[in-house]
Every structure is written in C-alpha cells, then in structure tokens.
Image 1: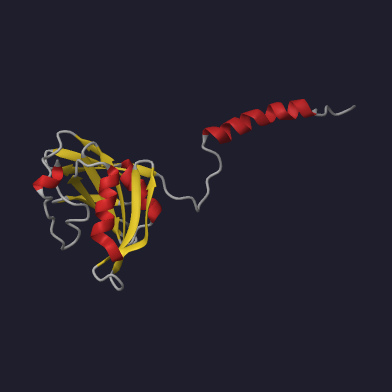
Image 2: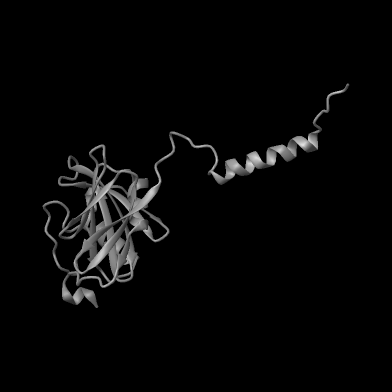
Length: 192
C-alpha cells in the first residue's frame, strides 16, 4: 500500500497558520534589541508631564521639570521653558550662548526635535553634555544628560506630553537651570 504524500500546495497551506502565529506574536524576538518605550507621569505644578521612557527607567519630579534615572546610573534632566519664539531664533540663541562650548558646531534638527552636544563649564575641559529639545506650543521642552545617548535623548524629547493646565513658567533662555546654573529671565523687550 502506498503512503499518501504531501504535495507542495498542501505544505504551504500547513505553513500559513504557523506564519500567522509568528506574525501575531511580533515575529522572532532579538535579545539585543533596545527595550520598548513606556509612559511615566510626573506632577508639574497644577499640571503633569507625560514622559516616554525606556524599560526600567524611573522619572521623578523636580522643581523645574523632572529627573530621569536609569538602572546603570545614567541621569537626565527635563526642563520646560516659555520661549514663545520660533525654533530658528532659539537655535541662534543657543549657538550664541554656547559659542566655543558647542561641540561639532552643528545642531542636528529632526522632526521638530533638535540635538546638540556641548561642554558644561570650561570650553576645552568641561563635562560633555547632550541636549535634545522640542517645542510644545509656546513652550520649549529640553532633556539634558552627560550619560544618555543622542538616540535616547531625542526619543524622550519627542515623547514628552503636557497635561493642561500648565503652570505659569518664567520666560527663560534655553540651558538655564541645569545643575547649579540659575535661570535668567529674558529681557522683556526681547520677547516682542
């Protein structure tokens, strides 16, 4: 007696449920892929900051925004500024203010989010910082860190959302309020 053989079309029909099951589960998982992003909420005045964070990152409230801590000791600061100026003017202000401390002299601008590296303190020996920033209406949201990568800083900046009502925020130049630097209000005549 002859055994029934499976033809090529019947094999492909058997493979379809297996392919569908793998696709439904998101395909094969790679151990080296970066962790998924999740949302964390931090109180900010009478409003809230909703931050996109990597797996196991923790966000906490700070007087001028939020602080993000990573399991490997990394840290980032989230600051909110009431700039009310076009992004091009903000970029010119940053370039003027940082002058010789800006690393690479170019600010990377991608999808309403920009990124730059700079030296905090002395121009040649200061600690290297990275800052990613984005606009939210008249507000400027910046994320600054000496330990997180450009990809992570841009990822957090592009995922920040604010819940209204937003507290009244003093008008400040970008990069104020970082560590021990104090925030200097803009000149009222510059705000027009």
